[in-house]
Image (cartoon, rainbow, N blue to C red; front, top):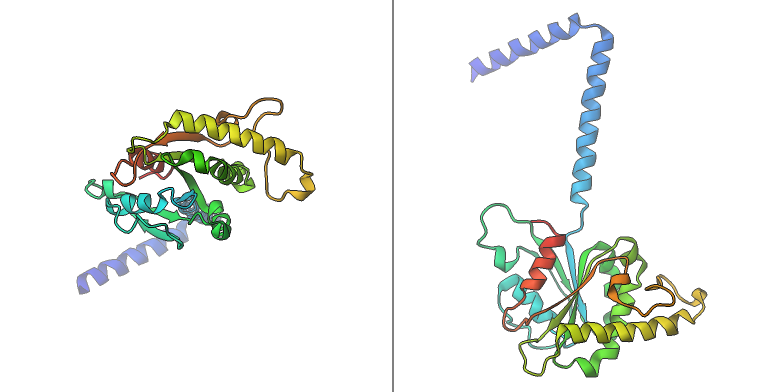
Length: 256
């Protein structure tokens, strides 16, 4: 230990001697380069850490959001068969990636209850979202179609979603059921319902609408490709563990 201390003292004296022999201008330049390098590293670190890793699960009550949450986290639908009135909020490595070798980035998943009085929670988490999964009940779609379209419209017209181009996955859940509708049918019907909403809401004075961006192209029937952010449609079944489309969406927008 004493030998290492003596060596360190020699190195310090040698460094001091070298610095004294250098012109002041070179010392100032070297100090400036070091300071700039440190500053750039700090900025890069802050930028990297500020990238969102939050995935928001949204949709009407009973659509299967909570089941999906548990499948993503635990690989099981336990506790997810009853409509939840409380949010599920956790950061975890996707269950399908827990056996994966190497470092895997955890995902922050927030399951926002679909009850109307709890929708303000959605406004809190959307600004932090790397992506939104909008869950639709494919089996009971027709009876909830209008309400689902209104909820989705509210998300797609949020200024924070549009400006940040937050991607949205419309996940048609419960497609394992014989009476479930296809994702193509659900997509077309949602587009039709949103088109009706767009026309009716555009008739309202913009002064009466807060934090809302108009959807689509004026004079054309609405479709999801007109959105400024990416909107895709997929299907699966939370209760059977068929959630690969959601996992793929998450990893596309929250890099491992």
